[in-house]
Image (tube, rainbow, N blue to C red; front, side):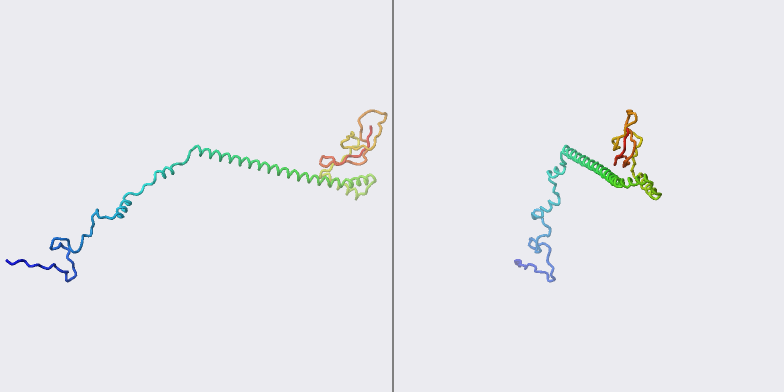
Length: 219
């Protein structure tokens, strides 16, 4: 019996296809190891990626406690009380300012009225010599034209607040009368002095004396 002759290994497929089956000698195929790997051969980076995907990171317990810590309620009450006190102080200051402003307006209004009254009084005082001239003209018999003019002027001034003082026959009042002469009473009878004659009329402006009447007194 003749010995077996050695067979050469099969060569590449003339059509370019490779053998995927097992080797005739029982070893691994010429195409290399299979495509799928075992878990033991996975890389460390792949293990970390898988761990991060499977277990998400949990927040720090300290951070959660910081968020939940809203402060002491007593401190919040103190802040609220301080805010209320500050509000009351501002309101009081505003009320005082408003009261001061109202007083200022009243004072300005009063000063304006007083200034107007003084201006009218000054004008009336300047016109008193004119009124004295009118009185002299009446005593010496003025004409009709002068009488009409005098009456119109006196009427206008009277409406504005000028009041004539003509105290003949009234009791002598040193506050409004200026005595220039005294006449004795007949029979030397005692009694209260009386105004017997008018030398120059006196005047009041809105109830305030601006010129005393010049009179003669009996008694």
